[in-house]
Image 1: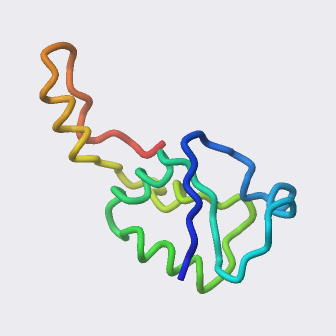
Image 2 (image 1 turned 120 degrees about the vertical axis):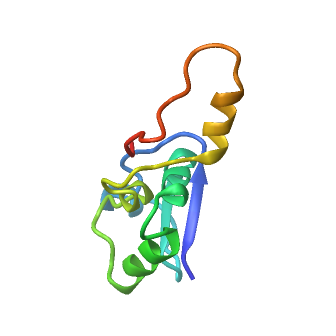
Length: 101
């Protein structure tokens, strides 16, 4: 089991020891992530979200670790957003090869 606290805005330092010391202790490994971090991690290809999270559960993640790191250098493709851009009557559609943020 792994807990993910999802926020609408990014809190860049929330997973560092300075901030984590102010949060309640949990029995379950937990990470705080913005919705954009979660989106990047979910649509990252090879390995998927579950493989990346399981690897971090087996060994403690480094201070300041974020879900976005699961994407690494891999391409992040969100087919829902790609289709939405393609349906717009103006502008150009972003390329399918958008690098991870």
